[in-house]
Length: 130
Image (tube, rainbow, N blue to C red):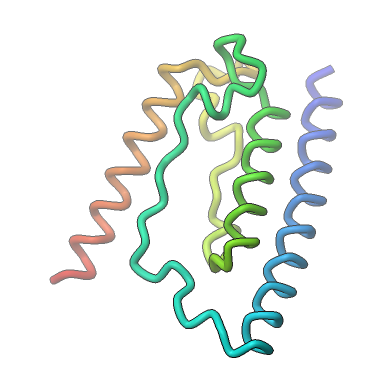
């Protein structure tokens, strides 16, 4: 059962990634064709999602399918808005959030991951400002 869920999540992720790349390429080509796109969100901070935004069915736990569905939609929205997808390959896998490996991300696991991501972001900012 777990292998089936993982296989579906991986397939969904690959299809989503391919769609995001196509959208990003077509958006970039369209922007350059029209002479637009000088501002692609440079310096723009993206709001980190809340647990409730990712918990699509509202049951208090995030499963892999919800996680990848949310990510795919968010990436497509950013690509459609002209955002660069340069760090898409570095996006964390569901398994990196599921700390107890029970197939679900709890609010506590999600909060721990968000805190870790904020710390990494702040560390990168400090390195680039010095």
